[in-house]
Image (cartoon, rainbow, N blue to C red):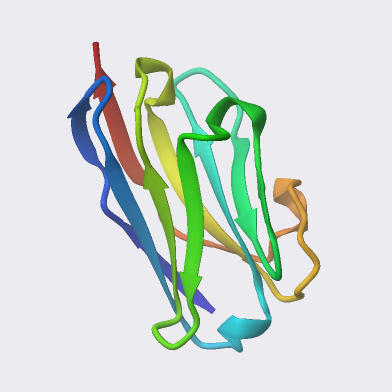
Length: 120
């Protein structure tokens, strides 16, 4: 399975971005898909995941929305009301199981990351 993330960029605080992650290979509809992020000098952290349901880290609840289009083998992360503390490299990940998980080590495949920079 190969994952290609896109959609990052520079945005002002309060703005919006939509990240996309296109998957090739595997059976996308059966996978749990997740978004993680890593800010400079910090560890990679969970952001959101989607399988039959969705789950978000507390800091993005009400601002970010994860969704998927199984016909396009793509998962999205709509990010609204962005804050400077959302600045990070965002990674998409796939777990070859429908079980929703939030721990990075439980994901099997990773994309290359896309940089999101939120200016104050």
